[in-house]
Length: 294
Ligand code: GUN
Image (cartoon, rainbow, N blue to C red):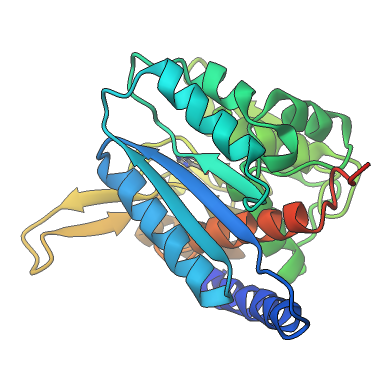
């Protein structure tokens, strides 16, 4: 069993980005600028935004965060999106999810200009992804694809089983894995809450991607010997340790790891790659790579 070290891959990519930013600044240019909109005080969202700010700082990007109270109106939030869409100093931005219930998240995401949608959540970017056209890839699926690439994990002809059909992870990773590309070319089964005989299906997986949002859900008897297991879950579980909690994924690591050829740990696996993918998308926005300037 080999551990997939997301931390060292992420650090390596960040170093490459930092060198490119330094060269831009040496040449008298402005660094890329990533902005984020954060509504309310959801703990996980705060952590994600703080990590994003740290990562931007580490590579030399400009980073800004627009914070709003949870009672912000939908109309006001749409105005914030319009402002960022039209701010020439901002190359790309994200609106952190989840949003409060009184706000229609789809309406907000659809207002973001596709050129600045570095989360890859706008229907234009999702559609382009489905068609195999250049697009901003959602950060977590893009991070997983980078791990396959960096570890030389063969995906072609493999049976990839995805657990969870969210717009953020399950659906886009299933599209990417079935794409005619390298990595890609897998035969994909997308499982969800209505799937019948789940363990029977997961046991057929050469590559199992768990993005189901339930701590320790994947047990040893659900995994084939020699499988590659990618754990997207991040859960904070209270305990009586000094810290008061521990972090775990959707996979019961202790049980499952000995059966795997490769497995991502939590923490230290997919999570760190997510932020790096967002930085890479911001660089693409800065260079107008996906949507060339007219
Ligand atoms: N909430 C959980 N993951 C994400 C993400 O990748 N982007 C945004 N905007 N919100 C999230």
